[in-house]
Image 1 (cartoon, rainbow, N blue to C red):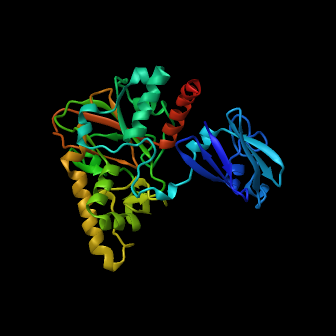
Image 2 (cartoon, rainbow, N blue to C red; image 1 turned 30 degrees about the vertical axis):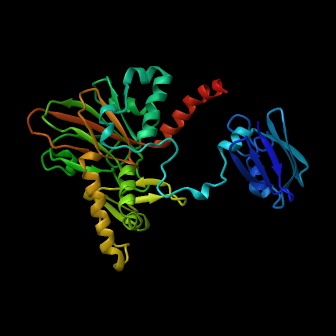
Image 3 (spheres, one colour; image 1 turned 180 degrees about the horizontal axis):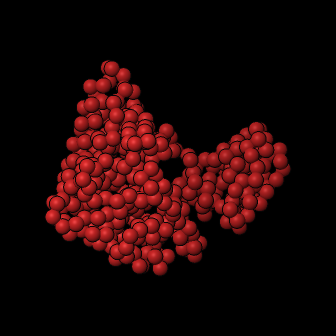
Amino acid sequence: MFQANLSQDGAIVTLSDGGDTARFHAIWLRDNAWDEQTRAPGNGQRLIALRDIDAKVHITEARMAGGQLHLLFAPEGRSIAYDPAWLMENSYDGKDQRASGWLADGAEAWDASLMGNVPTGDFNAVQSDPSARAAWLAQIARYGFAKLQNGPIEDGALFRVVDLFGHVRKTNYGDKFEVRTEVNPTNLAYTGLGLQAHTDNPYRDPVPTVQVLYCLESSAAGGENMVVDGFAAAQRLREENLDWFDVLSRHCARFEYVSDGVRLQSRRPMIELDPDGALRAVRFNNRSAAAITDVPFDEMATYYAAYRRLGEIIDDPGMEVSFRLEPGESFLVDNTRVLHARKGYSGAGTRWFQGCYADMDGIRSTLAALRAPQEEAAQ
């Protein structure tokens, strides 16, 4: 049973459900009203701007009735009802106590112990069954990557994977790119050499937040795919040496890609934090690293020590999950979080992958839309 108490000046409402307690400012409550004069029916977009709310807005009455919190706002003189469960779910009280390095809601850090339970979906089930699709996308949101099995073995099949959640993001590589051995390749990915775990395209701003790799041929020996949780690596660095974690998050690295008619550059930290200290992104790609020029002289030695140690953590076999993709199989990574790599493979046989980019907002949007009916049914 919810209870509401109003401060003497009407500026703050304290809401309690018998266990948790949260305070809300009158201006925040008025701005986040869901009545039809404030929000458009259907899409929920605001119909008013902050300028339309009196700067001296306050509450003259707060009462519970019919399971709703009813607030009377002045100087408007209008009563608006709120869902108290929604308010508690969106409470901001105490958020300033969040510890640096927290993961996004629902995300779970992992290491090599995940090897026996690699998140996986079946292409046909994910394509035809909304609950299977939601379960697969939820694994991506939780772990930052997932495999997909039993897909078609045909040129461009990776586009059908992207169609499950969003849209292809075209780059200078085109809608898709081929990954197989070439003579005189322009990119190390097109050779049989092993690759260090990395995030893709850190030289772009904004960076593509999803990468899909799809296997069409795989008879060459070796070439296993490998993934490392960049968030887990960053957290491990923070636990080992807070100064090293801080120097990589406070200063920008530079990344660059140069080819015929293309010169892509970006300036971002290797470990990017939100203002509240939550991990937002990890960028790590030694092949695309440009000269680091944004670190003060007195901190450069510390920066390189931290950079080296982060690389050592990423290279630690105890951090990696590896798997071999067979024709018709693919995997997807959150390119702002999960580093991917490939072990070396021999020249005998064939190896043909296709890759493309997309974005995480499509995954989050599709997952939220698929979950909505289930959540409504549970209420």
